[in-house]
Amino acid sequence: MANQTIRTPEKEKAILDALELHPSKSRACRSARIGRNAFYEWCKDDPEFAAKIEAAREKGIDALEDALFKDAIEGHNTTAAIFMLKSWRRERYGDKSEVKHSGDADHPVSIRLVRQ
Image (cartoon, rainbow, N blue to C red):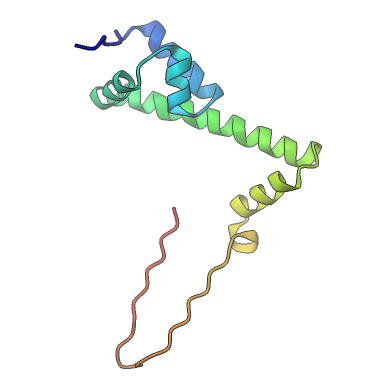
């Protein structure tokens, strides 16, 4: 039987702290020296812990977003600036798609676009 990571308050704090710095779950598990399987079991078994994980990841994503914004402005990083505009002003700068249909008007086609 494989070794199972024992859940302690220190390990929980380590993974939450790691996620606030880097929102990658895999990287946070490595940093906190917690097995990924154990991590996912903890999240599945404890909705309160899972909510803390998502809150910590949001902080990590916010930090990443701040760093990207700073680099776009202060670092004169055009790629970062374009990425931010496409994300935050999707209606104006986002990728456009056009769908054309020709065919029998008596049999319309239904199309549903989903953005994720």
